[in-house]
Length: 76
Image (cartoon, rainbow, N blue to C red; front, side, top):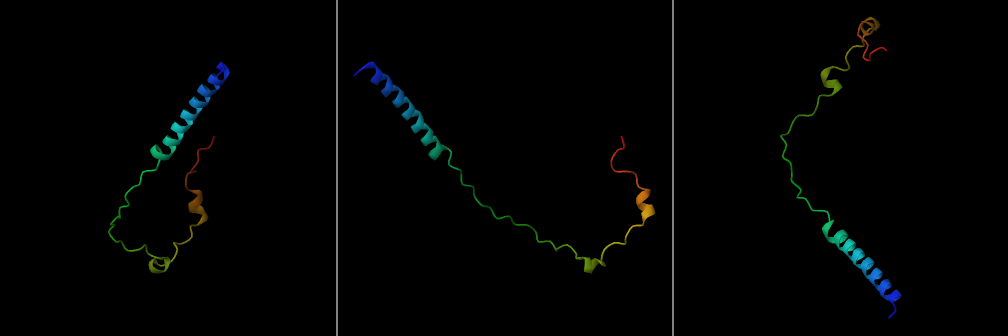
């Protein structure tokens, strides 16, 4: 064989080995690990009260109470 073919086969073999290593890494080492599914046992709590149970919405605030509050964002 001529040196050109030897160089070609060495290069093709190196590329094939790198590709085979990448495929092995992809299929075997990067496989997602299966996690156990645990059932969480929470204490049962009563549901939140509805608006009908607590008497509806709170009363509407008047405008003078809104203007006496300090601003929430600093003024530059």
